[in-house]
Amino acid sequence: MCGICGFYSKRDISMEQLAAMNNTMKHRGPNDKGTEMYMGKDHYSVGLAHRRLSILDLSILGHQPMNSVDHRITIVFNGEIYNYLELKEELKDYPFKSTCDSEVILAAYLKWGLDCVHHFNGMFAIAIYDREDQTLHLMRDPIGKKPLYYWLDGENLVFASELKAIMVCPGFTEKLRQDYLVRFLTNQYINAPDSIFQNVYKLEPGSILSFCRGKVETKKYWDVAKLYEEKKNTFQGSFAEAKEELKKKLQRSVALRMISDVPLGTFLSGGYDSSLVTALAQDASEQPVKTFSIGFEDKSHNEAEYAKEVAKHLGTNHTELYIGEQDMFDLIQDLCTFYDEPFADSSQIPTMMVSKLAKQQVTVALSGDGGDEFFCGYNNYKMLQDMQKLDSVGTLVYDVCQMPGFKQMKLMEMLPGKVQIVAGNQENPSKVQPFGLKQSQVAEKMVLGDSLTYRFPDEQQFVEKDWMIRRMLLDMVTYLPGDILCKVDRASMRYSLENRCPILDKHVMEFSFTLPHKYKYHNGSKKYILKELAYDYIPKELLERPKVGFSVPLDQWLRGPLREELQTYSASNFLEKQGIFAPDYTAKFIGRYLSQGDKGAGSGENYSRMVWAFYVFQKWWAQYRNVIQQ
Image 1 (cartoon, one colour):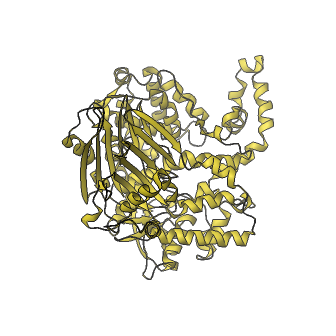
Image 2: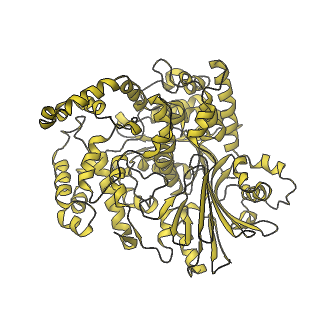
Image 3: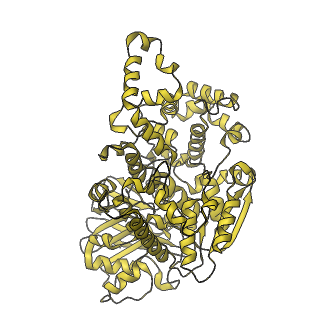
């Protein structure tokens, strides 16, 4: 787990400037650093830099940038190739010098070329410079665990694990993607391939970008939509056989992720996914596994007591930390340093807290991320199933509301909120994205200029008719990489902690595509097969309870200690100078929000998540405005 950056450019970028870019990511790799530069043809030069968090082969032999023995290729690499020992045996003709997975990537590329990526089982962002054809290749893992940004500026390319490394690159003064702000305010994150800047992109998960003297080619090597269509419902066995096969795949996945030359543990919330991962890890370990949980002083949001019971049952070495509102609040000032692109999923804050706790004892932590998306765990999946049954009725209500008389009297706005959602869901290319409509309508009035719809266009690639399944697929390419994995990566790397997700093993994900949906959602039970597998290790009574999750008191913060700062960011004169938001409307909207107290809760009038996103953006803008053109 590390940080990488570099360039392929005609610009005059010095070794010192490359080192400065690299050092913005010291938290991602505090153990070692390296920079190299090479001259190419047509006045191009190539620079590669690396910050190392040592996990495998802690010696100097793991130093990067790393060259192949013939000096044909050089790589910088962030992540882990979990099956590297198997690949190393397959590539034994290569004269290996180290015991780390980075060198296995070199050997794999020399043997298979870009097809090497199909052999990797892991999480990664890789940059390979091939001197033979003077091409720089960027690769990102199938589901997007590891981040990789790139800036295309005419004939020049700059890349980095984090945006701030690009922002300090010589020549960078970039324009905001102001048209994306409605989508950000509504959804709280920015999904690949987009970024907050024009001409700066995130390499999409499962993709390869090749750059040679100004020419760019990209291709997908792992595509959720295609893989699902190829594999769906191909598993022909019984539920018991499916459960046993899933168990074997998860056991192998966990075992691979426990390979480490540094201390390792797990995040344990007490929910199904983290409990199952922890149980499998403990089952594979001869010693008690270190487990970590955050507890909340607010009993209504506290799951620590359940996690403690699970840990006791499994026999782990458990550590818990109870935190209060002030503990979380204290992290706000650092958010934009480590989330250097606007990001407003507030559960980032407790995720940072549990990462800080774990780092005191371990350098690697396993988590249960991915269970909800691949095995049908979110409540909105059931809501969409119900909405699909009412779709024709919703269309009828919508048509009635559009009749001249009813439209004039704004009949739609008089209907109950849930009816409005069903009736207003008339955009066929985005049927599984009905939520957030009211918030987006407000956001459209707040943001100046033209705006993208809040709905992600990614839904159009899926031909699946079942709304529940289609939303799961959509979340795999939007919410999971854009929000969940981004949140965990930045929160854990803030404390130089490597996070590994066994459920997001390539073979586990692909196996989930083969399963009948009834194995995932059965008689109202979400994540059915995962739950049944978890019960093999943990008593049902310890796991069966409503999901709580990490909760942050946004309303109390925004209307309390953050009130004055929020008022400053939303004042008409401030907004006029900024030139991003409509001054009068935005000032009045934030003013109404601050004066409502808790009256709007549950009525559809509560916009705390969107106001938080506005606050986060403004705080980000204030920190980075010196490099921003509008």
